[in-house]
Amino acid sequence: MMGITERKSREKENRIKQIRDSAATLFYKKGYAATTIGDIAALAEISNATIYLYFKSKDDLYYSLVEPSLDRLSKRLIAIANTKELDPESRIRNVISATYDFYEGDPDAYHLVSRYEASGFSKVLSKDKLHQLKELMSSNINQLEIVIADGIALGRFCESNPKLTAIIIWNTFMGVIQFQENRLAEGSSDYRRSTIDGAVEIILQGIRKG
Image (cartoon, rainbow, N blue to C red):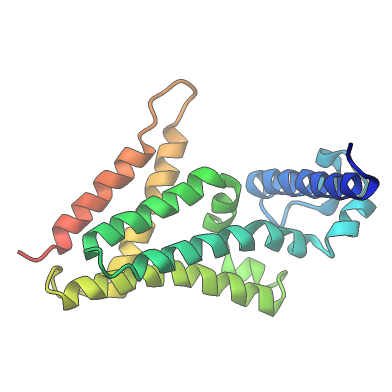
């Protein structure tokens, strides 16, 4: 039988999840600026005061949605980039695969990040939180840059600007997701993963030496 302490802890976890899920839905549909604490409370069917029991502010709630997922992705991509026993092409494919897993497993966090507007969030997030988000997002592209630089050093890839190539791969990923989502209708074929894999292979063909 569940004790009082355990039951209260579970109730707290469920309430926080309820708030976070409602916030993620509204941030994605309406945008950060247009969403109010009142909107989130109404969707979660609780009072504004209840939200403030768990989150200090709207930006604290937003940060709690994005940062943990980004941090997990960042650590996974760092591990992949540092798996030196794998060839650079395999590491690039693994980075993209891990990023797709992040998108598929936590689409709300992905969409919040992909719609990130530096100018807007700099006005509402604290400097520390904004800096942390920027660092995590930069780290993800940096891991691709590291692998590409390794490929050039090993003579596997043509001489190029590793950062620019990493940005091109990253933006291709986001562009494919957005384009395919816009075309995805209920019951239709899902070409997101296959299109991304195909795009990566085309880019690898372009940078492969010889």
